[in-house]
Image 1 (spheres, rainbow, N blue to C red):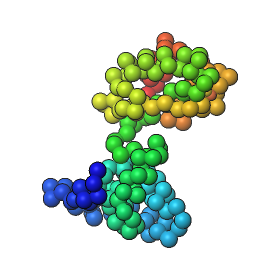
Image 2: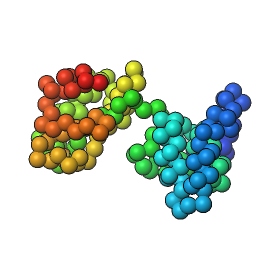
Image 3: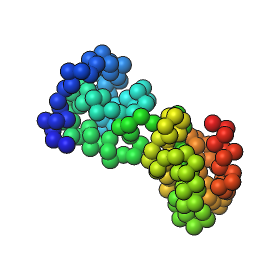
Image 4: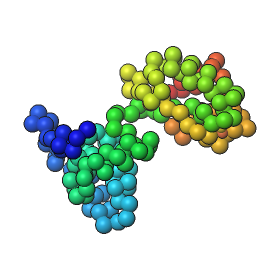
Length: 166
Ligand code: FES
């Protein structure tokens, strides 16, 4: 995307100065610190749930950085999301141990059950579905996480009862 296009303001969009004002205090705290962009993006995602392009532009302006630097960081780190995320995040482990013990089957089963592809969010906004690379439960593979809870020795038949808890 060209710098000019990214910097274009939409006359139909709400006033971004007011819409994203909540992040101003955080920007003021981190402004002079090394690596402040990542800290500000982290806080902004905590406040707004995700990092839409107008918010990235707002942060770039506030920190006096080129928008390309901000979009580059957001797209580099999988933690940052430019699109809305689900209420819960499912991460199926596809590290070696989990992969060989059926992790891929869990992914296929979840794609069918949730009706989304990897990286997607269910239509009802309940789940965002991602993969992980080892979550420290290799001895009881295959494993998956929902938010901070680790589920071990997961089978396709266990998945529905796990999802029902959410
Ligand atoms: S490979 Fe899945 S928990 Fe380690």
